[in-house]
Image (cartoon, rainbow, N blue to C red):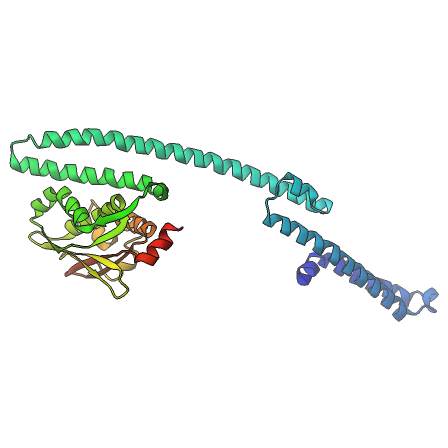
Length: 338
């Protein structure tokens, strides 16, 4: 605080030193001051100036502490008027308050606009779902098997994109939207596999889900979204006539783990630290126009909100293993107590 005060009053100190030097020069050059003790005069002036600086330091320090102390509380109009400030400090405070009011008004307008845009987008997504359902029913009536398979595949791609956009829009309010209860992993995984059945049949990809007896405490809808994103990536990057292995285990801490292992192209080591970043498609994604870089990003963020940890191990050319670690009982209590 002392150093800050001295830097603030540097111009005063410099002016005093210059005037003291000028006075000493005049006293030595003018013979009329020959009988005056220059040393005594310098001491008196220096002591007086030091006392003056100490007085300014005490007064201004109290003002600053009073001002900063009130900033920690709500600085409304009554508090603002009760502050003991100099005229310049009062002018600064008034300007700062005006800037804050302007920024608050702008921020509120932006929040209202963002909420309106979110509501419009949600309404649009729900409107799109109706024709998608109708199109799916029409596709089932196509007699040509080859054409029907292609239409079902394209419909599934469109459905996944719309679903991803829906969950991305809802993510901002996930705390209000989630519902924690006991979920059977087998039920969630089977439902997602069934939804992607057309895609899997087209590539002749099978699933080994023999060991899925565990149940976890989480939100079923958001867990299904996480599994959907990981499964879609596994199917997308797996070659034809391969198998995806899905199994569970319990680690040393008692946490339940869900593993999804594919035999796809794998992920390069330099891409691994960034696959959960927004819009990052990686080396493989640049070779596919279908990649948006949003699936794993959204899955990772949703998992964090649910207390689920997603990790991945991968070897290029051998495939990847995505692991979901569900919180144990004490971690779940911390999660719900936020």
